[in-house]
Image (cartoon, rainbow, N blue to C red; front, side, top):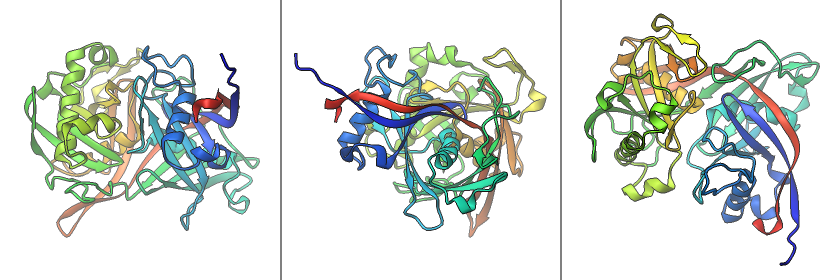
Length: 397
């Protein structure tokens, strides 16, 4: 057997929010992977350890969950008024596929910190002590994100007392602002915040029936349904959903029906090549429950409960982009999210998720009869876990 050497590529392993991913500087990638295409996808899959029929990603950097099967490519921005371009790839665990259709809100936090670690931000803009606003161009969805990264003695501050449910240890707070976060649109909705033109639709789902649904494109395209309509309370933890094949099939059917209705795909079969978007979330009025860590969550401390699916599984906390969708929908009177939160106008919402609670703000308004959202704001944290090189067999690309 011919010996195939490994090649090594500079990389940084980072946590951002409740996710982890492998970060690359664009210029450090092999030439064939510096442009979109099969070579880039193959490289990222091999780094993560996919596709893995065992579903464990043992031979790679992935953690066998949607939250840890991620790669990020960052480069100096070619867009005026921005520091970096940030490209996100969601690597499928067990299939031969990298989804580039959306953003990761959690890793957006790490992208801001990584830009500073990588030296991509003009030193004149970095204070010796204080806050550095990193201007990020999100290349997947063509949106601007501002990351307010704390700086101490000219370096990124990573330690702190900010606690984020779903993350074991406290760290420094990074405030994220998603500017004009409504999706630019790919289907008949053409960039509308509500692609169907309605705050609530009747969605016919094969094998499930007709459901009320709010379909929104803010942060990431998301289909919201009422938990009670699909047999849930909205307080479920991962095992209840992820160990129930019938439940997973039902929620995937809702996702596919929503994707078709939103114009994101033309046929149901296309959903297999677009697993990252749209998200499906089910909502319910606030009620008491115990989080996955054993921490009690009181109904009086939240506005509603939300559970969301990511890459075919119930997420252990809440995706950052879905949090933007939740806050935006909550700010628009009449959506299912707004009604679950008690109705009325609001500029922020605190919701319960499997790991605890999260508060997100959004500014929505009507312009010429159409709802728009100007920004969404949330707090996350980020930390470098490891830096050096990743190694892959030379015949990967």
